[in-house]
Length: 105
Image: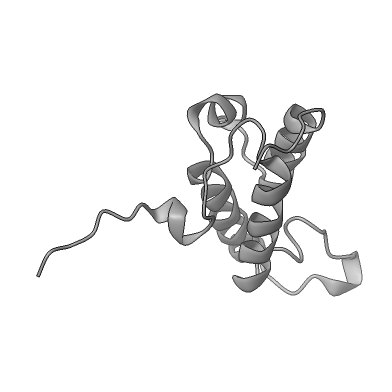
């Protein structure tokens, strides 16, 4: 049986983040992070009374979200966030980087 060459990123978003597709990419990324239960508490912080996860679990959840974001970027975007340790910071940086670009897809 022949195996297809499917990258991990295509399982998250249909197209890597590049110039001109940020708006579509960000919708797919948000949906993915929500579906993996990584949006609340990572991208949208919990209030102090809503802290549902241990510090260790929060680090794991942040790392999973950050990994999904990083592997879904083309090199031009990845290089801007590669040392970022926070998934929220990475998304904020990408939004700022791509905010003035018109959608081309």
